[in-house]
Amino acid sequence: MSMTIKDLATEEQPAWCGGCGDFGILNTLKMALSELGEERHNILIVTGIGCGSKCNHFIHTYGFEGLHGRPLPVATGAKLANPKLKVIVVAGDGDTYGIGGNHFLHSMRRNLDITLIVENNQVYGLTKGQVSPTSKKGTPSPSTPSGVIEEAINPMALAIAAGATFVARAYSFDMPHFKQLIVDAAKHKGFSLIDVFQPCPTYNRVNTMMWYKDNLYNVDNNGHNPRDRDAAIRLASTGMVNGKLAYGRFYIEEGKYTYDEDVAKVVAVPPVEQDIGNIDIAPLMQRFAWK
Ligand SMILES: Cc1ncc(C[n+]2csc(CCOP(=O)(O)OP(=O)(O)O)c2C)c(N)n1
Ligand code: SF4
Image (cartoon, rainbow, N blue to C red; front, side, top):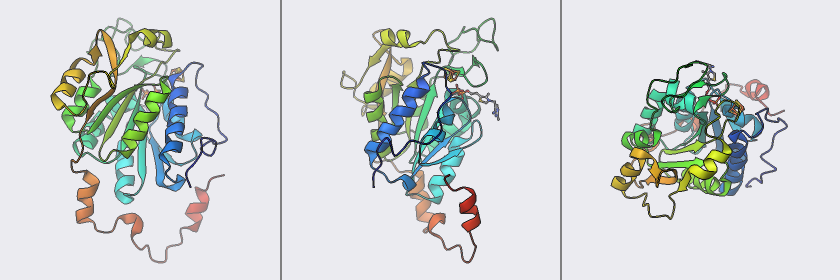
């Protein structure tokens, strides 16, 4: 039975600041999940720690809120234990590109069949506005009062170079476009990255909703061919078109091996299907039961 958006609701309510892009991301993810038509027990949403990483509290599927920087290793374990799961990771830019940077690179190198949605607000929101790896050089913040010294990371170029096979960018409040990206990414066989620009009205006073309105350019069906690797690398190297930030499908490669497929050649029966003998798991299930 597929789920409606109403079926996906929980009793919890987000406590995000008004105008936060996390609302757009949460609602769009629910729209995409309902369209995907997967059954509830086949979906796992893994998050890290951050404002947006609370999202799986508000979506009635399986969920796991991990450690800051570590959702990708958790997702890797879950996917290998149960290859039938649709695994979606949702984490902040600090979580993914900072402390979790190494996991980011290696998950893509493996082309693991999971989807990563990065809530890119260019700051550490939850810990009160310090700069993150995507903050623009010169940005002042509580942790860099004279402006951040490093250049920002380029996740799109990194992802293509590292081996991800679906690399896209979204905007949290262009929901129809973002929803289709999630659906396509989740159906894609291999590692899919959607880096999502999201306003953080509390700590990022530059990239506001109004600013994005004037500074985004949708590359989908607009002259860019995501299946042309050279074109994708050129687009990703600046991330810009006509002086605006490009969003949409940067790069798509089909038919490449995936890590989970290769593991399956070595481990014939995935752990989830292995016999656990006479262990009584009822108390454990009871402890984690949905209330
Ligand atoms: C190992 C570890 N280091 C640091 C922290 C503190 N911490 C929690 S959230 C966070 C940054 C959150 O920023 P981001 O991942 O970009 O998510 P956002 O809150 O902006 O959505 C930090 C540094 C932590 N919880 N665990
Ligand atoms: S601090 Fe920023 S990211 Fe966090 S809830 Fe508020 S607006 Fe959203």
